[in-house]
Length: 315
Length: 264
Image (cartoon, rainbow over all chains, first blue to last red; front, side, top):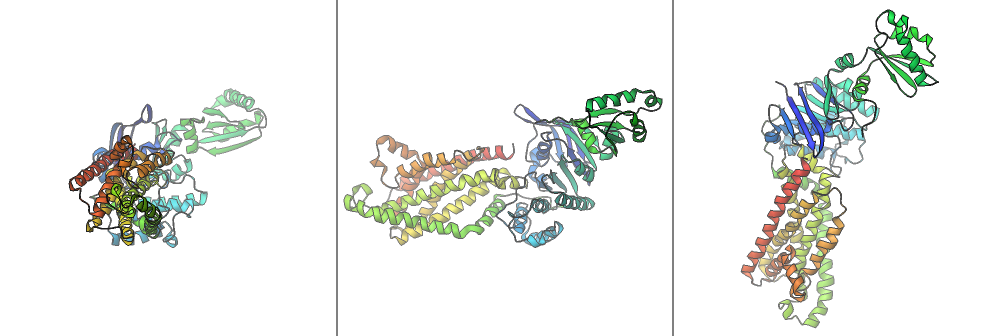
């Protein structure tokens, strides 16, 4: 049985529908991601899974229980890393873990050993007695993760775990989350970073405007929603002119000779993207079109994401 | 696997507040000492010597010296001020700045544990400060009845009659914009017009009747009766009932506003 299951899960705030009837299941031991732009409904979904927000529609089961009736029991088996840190800045690093562990009614003696282990795990042992306030953003995030682990949760919920961190700090966090995954901790995370989703998630759903628009492993999503390769052609001149030339190229006799040369053309301010399964053949034919430089790369989750959720800002 | 059954309780939320109190108890106790000393010295002794000379320890103060009249009133007023402080910024902070409540909400603690945990801590703070106040009163020689040891508890009830509805209101606020208006134009007038510094019978009848409705007037009457040991047994029960009723109503409303804010 899946650890978390939702059917037609909906969250409305007045007239605004933040989560619009989504279905998903999370299996034990997997890392499951909600990927989507800001305002897609990821955090609202996480808050419902964390049993701090009642669904306005649909059904949700967490660890086989109904959050509306057994929120307390469910929460005692979850670990939550919120989007916005809510550590107590006036308490020390160790005290933050201690006091949070006490909310779970964990025995003081047990907490003492567990705090030492967790500080070791998130590499904050030397800072145990320091105040939280002067810690760096990465350290605070690691402390928040340690705090979420204090009750040895069965599911760890991470709402944008690395937003706002510098690259080094992000990699440290990812590496810790990997270790947890190897230990079999089920993780549910939200992110708007493609690399994060690709690195961490076994399976993910892409959300846009409250709905799930795609689901699968990062690999599957790329195969399904993008081509094998992307050819980026840059120009000094007019992008529209070059794009037109590239479209004509696609219709030329050489191009029509075998499989389709490319699936899609996308114009950006300084270059044109060609989504293709035949990068090399395409590049060989490019000589006929005036351009500055060419780059052939593999499709990434970012291509999938932008294809599914669009490039325009939704504010 | 984690222990399956966690029994959440208010006690666990109180532990958090006590841990923070351990960080600043010295400063907070010092304030609890200094503020009554300053007030009683300046107004009780300074102003009091004038009043006693003019009124002649008279009829209007129920036969009391001004210091003995003032001190128990200030005990109740002080509890009100402290309780209002504790239920404004720290409560909004729990939702917004420090997000303490939000951290608690993600644990097994329920909304009512979070709420009652903070209220319990507020009551503890106000009670402690009120006992310190009573100690200072005794040092000034303005305690004349053994029943006075109960006065700090009544002062704390008076404080909580303010803290609970105040916290209920604060839980509906996005920011602290109205807080100073509230202290200046709601709390301060009560401090000045509710029988702390002079009997409300000195006021025009309309203001006197308004004063009867304020929780602080009931607190002042209770504290004064207990510290001077002067009668009014039946009236005391009425005052107590009024304060307890306000605390219950305030807590019920706070439970609604807290729940709405925590789990929106």
